[in-house]
Each structure stands twice: as structure tokens, then as C-alpha cells.
Image (cartoon, helix red, strand yellow):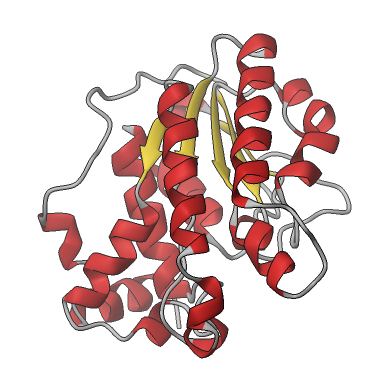
Length: 244
């Protein structure tokens, strides 16, 4: 199914109805200039099969929301020759981002930096592969953003809300995921606000889509990784929230 068909399907099922409801978006539209660099960071949701062997801007961005955002921005700002990077890596948590931050963020010098991180910080703990608490997540994330602001004082930060949907493994293990996941999500918002970042409300977006009648599994089969329809909604939300 092509991109237009996915959008039509999402709209037909009511998944995009949230766009007509109140939501926290960027107050002012960002004025981009020629050659501006936009960097997407995160885990598998951002990675989405992107080229990790030889990453270059504007190519091999994967099949997820960064690719959809890039396609729309290149269409709308064709004359600006934007340089869009995806450096998400499947399975990564906040400590993993910190280890590669100079190479995969600071050295790229983004004008806009988008970070979606958090689901693995709890998922890997539930699987017995990590022992980080919600407070470890909060403090590590805050330290990462402080480090970023010191190295890149002119970079606009966009912090994406960690999310899950009530389907697949999340639904099957609901009592283990909650309320810990909600605590981590709240910590992400607190860290974002403290850093003066733009908040991208992905959990609200999915919750609103489900409230209109869309099945959670149609947006994320396992409750964590979005379908293409889910990624398209994320791309729309990201642009409206960031203001470009």
C-alpha cells in the first residue's frame, strides 16, 4: 500500500480525528534557512530499518515517522536543501544514547534535534536485561539534555512523548507495564519542560485516535512499534508540534 493509501485508511478509520481537537503545539512557527540540519534520535521506533552501515542525510531514513517527515519537508521546503538525519538505533535506552552522543548528535550540529526514548528503559527491565528505575531514566535523560544544551546552545530541542498502546505484549502484560510506564512518561515531560524543549504528545495522539474508534492494534500491533498508519500520524503530530 502506498503512502496516500495509508493516509486515506487512517482518516477513514477515524485515526486522524485528534487533529481537530485541542492539543499542545508549538506556539510559533520555526523559520528554517537553507541547509538547516534536522536530527531524529531514539530507539527502534525511530530507527525503523534506517541505513546504519553508512548513514548520510536525506537517504536511508527508514520506513518510520522520520522518513515521512523528511518527505513532507523536502516537498514543502524544496529550495532550502534541508539535511535530515536519522540516528535511531533499535534497542537503545538513555544510557546508550549517552555513549554515542558526541558522534551521533553533537558532531552533526543539528538546528532541530528530536528525541524519542524511554520504552526500552522499561521493556528491557521487564525482560530482566536492565535494572534502571524510573528515576534513573529521569536523571539520565536530564543529564543528556543538559549536556546537549551546553554543546549545542542554538539547537531547538523536541522531546517526543514515550507511548504504548493496549495491544500485543503491552496488553498481555498490562499489570507489569503500569503504573511504572506512566511514571516514566511523566518524568519525560518534566525533563522536557525543565530543558525548555518542545513537547511532542505522541501518547495523547494515540489515545485520541483510539477514542475515535481506531483499534490499538491497527496503530501498533505489539503495543510498542507503530504500523505505517501509526507512523504517519506521528509525522503529522511531530510537524504540528515542532512548528515546521
